[in-house]
Image 1 (cartoon, rainbow, N blue to C red):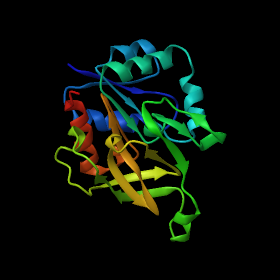
Image 2: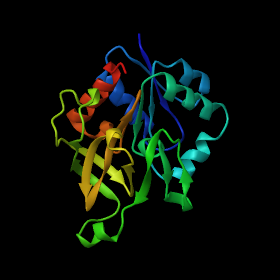
Image 3: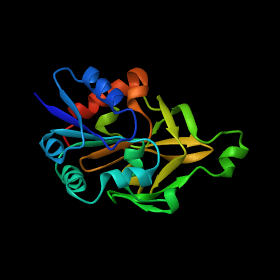
Image 4: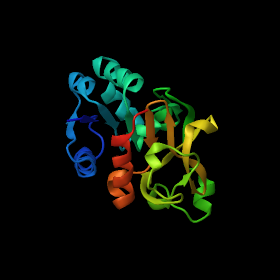
Length: 209
C-alpha cells in the first residue's frame, strides 16, 4: 500500500485535504503529521497551507522538520497547495519580506490596486479558470480552462516560463500551477474544487516523475 503524508504546520483545513486524497486514491494510506520521521517514510507528500507565510515558515522552523521537507523535495513526489505553492518560490513580499524554499525561481506579491479598480476584491476568493500553460501529468483528464476554487491575497509569478504549468487571470495574470522535477504545486484548493480537484489529486497519486 502506498503512503501519503499531509504536512501539518497548523495552517489550513488539513483533514479536508486528507479526506479528499483518501477519496481520490483507493488503497492509499493517508496521515496528517508534523513528525519528520513520518514525513520521511511517506511515498508522497502534500505541503498545504493557508494564512500568512511568516507564520507558516515559523512553524516549519530550521530543524529536523525543515530537513525532512528538503529531503522529500529532492527524492519523491510533492504537491504544494495554496500557501504550499507560494512557499516554494524564492521570496514573498508578505510579512515584510520572507525568503522561500527556493525550489521555484520567482516572487510572491500582493494583489495590487489595478485589480481592485477593475471591481475585483482582495482576497481573490471563489471559482476561476486555470489555463494550462504546458502539458503535465497532473492535468490528465482535466480540460484546459477548467475552473478551480481559490482563496488568496498574494500571488506568484514564476521567473522561468518552463516552470509555469498553469496560469490564471484576476486583474492580471499569475502563476496558478507550477512544477519542477518531482515537485508540483497549485494556488487553488483541489480539495474544494469538486470533480476536477479530485481528478488532480488522483493524477498526483499516479504521477511518477
